[in-house]
Image (cartoon, rainbow, N blue to C red; front, top):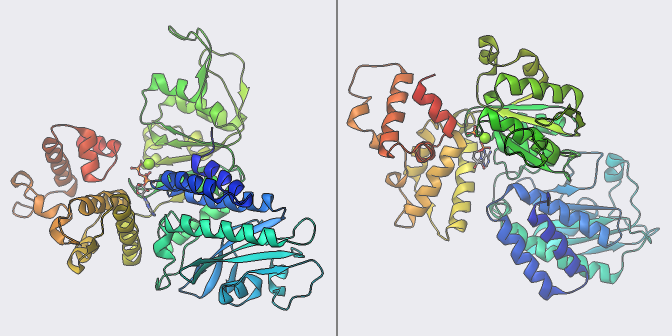
Length: 503
Ligand SMILES: Nc1ncnc2c1ncn2[C@@H]1O[C@H](COP(=O)(O)OP(=O)(O)OP(=O)(O)O)[C@@H](O)[C@H]1O
Ligand SMILES: [Mg+2]
């Protein structure tokens, strides 16, 4: 129930492929791709599951999925059963996997067979003793996209049947890669190096590299992580990446949006309640803390919690125990916490609306997301290409961006960050009547500024005041509908409310 559906479909797919039932495999692949379409986050989970199941079904000890980085002419491990190192990079031609990538041919080596292609550097790097090996190329139209490799068959020898099964699996992996954002990255003419372990998170700027490095270091430890940053910068993506890169990745990831519920309900949502805890509580219910047992609890908008709930959360963080509403006996919870907020917690602490002790407890590891405008032109281009590709596929359109339109995107300050960019491009892809998106098709603010907020002809005013007027005007345009206004402005609903209040 907690496992994402695509991952289950992946397991069923491998089952059918190993058994040689390609007709059934096709059905599972279709289901898998249908479910992946809108959910890049699950891609890593699916690829990992494929490698896990393949390794298990073919009685191997370890498996690795490598993809070709055309920019650097290297093979980079995408999924690997190699706790020793975070990522393997091999030159095309180096080692067995490198040879497979170079020659576009499968390799099968049995125990005690000497093979000159075997890379000693590889075993030295990992401390792992390879005995038998099976590797097949991942091919699209004769071009090698990657290598799927298994190590150490239980009997010391992979069979011809194993090789055929692995080749079938490899073909389907190519289909899966083609059905996702990795497709554009894997084009042989892609000049940009691949950013792997966080593939669904687009960005290679120095500031994003720093974020990845922190995630990679913090994720495997069971420490509390606090993700901060402006609205729409990708805090939730990073929170999910922490879970998926942690030892709890096979456990549940449960999200609680602390801003979405009033105080009276949030406690119930988190901790559940005993029968008779309040009028209408006719049975005992479980909360999200319980649901996250063995996994990760993602507390979004943590800054919105009221002081009493903050107190209860602090107890949970300290004692790893919690009380249901109306309960008297504390229950244990094996939960890892990842929290996110866009508010200035230090200010809240100074104002007395956020507990200082909780604040220190939460920020054991702090990850600060850079705003889009600080990520440089390279990242903006990557995100634009990523979203264009995604929305063309999703909306079955084939449009490109004019140079003028791209320049306009580069000069926009993106107050709503990546989310605003995402909405902007989706709207342009859907609404653009021709095959090229021009500046006029982009829903960027300037030319729609109304008379009432004519910032260019009146005297200079504080930016905050201008912004407040603009937000009010946008709200009017949407007949007071806050969600629609927030979506149009590319900001979250809470941010909108804050901006209206002017704080
Ligand atoms: N680096 C990125 N690569 C690809 N997509 C991204 C990236 N960052 C953000 N997005 C997309 O932008 C949108 C906003 O991201 P997300 O919800 O993680 O932001 P957030 O910081 O939690 O925002 P808020 O504070 O408003 O809740 C999502 O649709 C997400 O998929
Ligand atoms: Mg969020």
